[in-house]
Length: 173
Image (tube, rainbow, N blue to C red; front, side):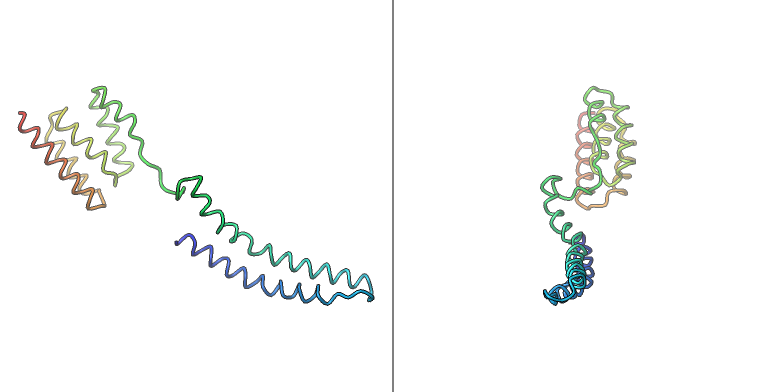
């Protein structure tokens, strides 16, 4: 709604300018009568019509934005100004191929670039405990994630994953 607020404000200000111009143009164009000096009448008619056209052009931009914003959502799937999402493909591929250290580096880079995303921390904790057998590293990643994650739900999920993975690993050892 904040996006629309600025559009409505702009439209209101432009209408304050356009309405008097429209009224003046209508008044000038309406007073033109045949039989007087043709040059004066033509110039008055031209001035009146010009003011009417100008009064239509002034609010055109905010009106076009009001129409385009919702229609743009159809093509762009909602707000197309959202921030980019992390690309996990390469890190996931390294992990699936058993290249755990490389995957860990890629997930760490993603965690640095997107510190409020849950997935890099979950994946790094899993790799550290299950594949690298480094519970100290997993704890460091867990604490870092708990510090960086903004949403309570994400912190709870990370805590649950960390505890479950630790308990699963300690049962196998």
